[in-house]
Image (cartoon, rainbow, N blue to C red; front, side):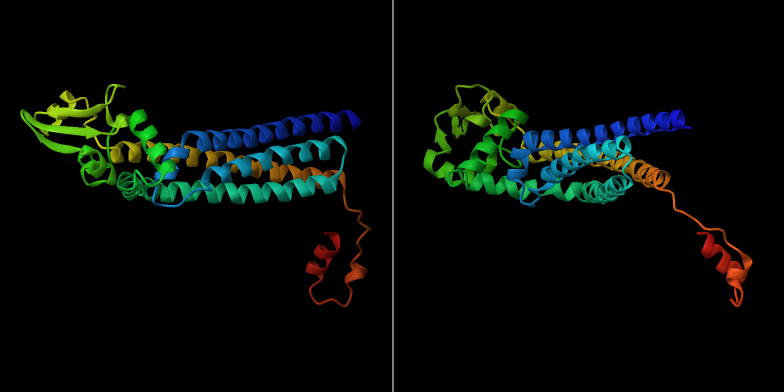
Length: 277
C-alpha cells in the first residue's frame, strides 16, 4: 500500500511540474509582451498599460504556487493542497479574464493606434517619450506617419523644419530621419511627384504605420490570448488533483449508520444519505 501511495505521489508531483511549467510559460509571455509591445502600447490612444503586467503577475503567482502543490504532496499536508487548489482557482479566473478580454477587445486595442499615432505625429516636439516610440516604430516597420508621410505636413515639426516647400524641379520635402530609407536622412529631398514612385525615389517610406501596426498588434494579441486561455484551462487539472489528493490524505472518519438513527424522520432515505456523507 505504501509503495502504491509513493508511486501515486510521484505521478501527482509530475503533474504539478506541468502546471508549474504552464505558469512559467505565462510569465515568459508577459516578459515578451512587456518588452516587445511597450512602444506600441505607449502610442495607443486606448489605455491598456496593465495587460503585460497581468500576464507577469499571473504567471509568477502560478509558478510560486506550484511549489505549494509540490510541498503539499511531499509532506502529506492536506491543508496546503487545499490552499493550492484555491490559488489555482484564482489563477484560472485571472487567466480566463485576461484571455477572453484579449480576444474580444483585440480590434479595439489595435484600432486605438490610429488616433494615437496621429497624436504622436502632431505633438512630436512636445512629448519625448512618444517621439522616441514613434521613431522606433517607423524604423522597425519601415513606415511614415499614421496614414502616410503627408501626416507630417500639419505637425509642429513641419512648421519648424519647413517640411514642404516649392523648388525649381518640383517640391522639396523634409521628414524625420525615422521616415527615411537611408540613415543619412531625407532633409530637403526633391519630390518630383507625390505618388508612391516619387516618394520612394525621394528615399521616404511610402506607407503609413497604422495598417502595419493594426495587423501586427491584432495578430499578436490573438495568439497571446489564445495561448493564455489554453494554459488557464490546464489549471482545472491542478485544482481537481489538489482536491482529490487532499481528501485522500485526510479521509473523514465515519461511524456506522443504522436505520434506527433515522426513526421518526419523515424522509428516511435522505436521512441515511446525509448520515453516510
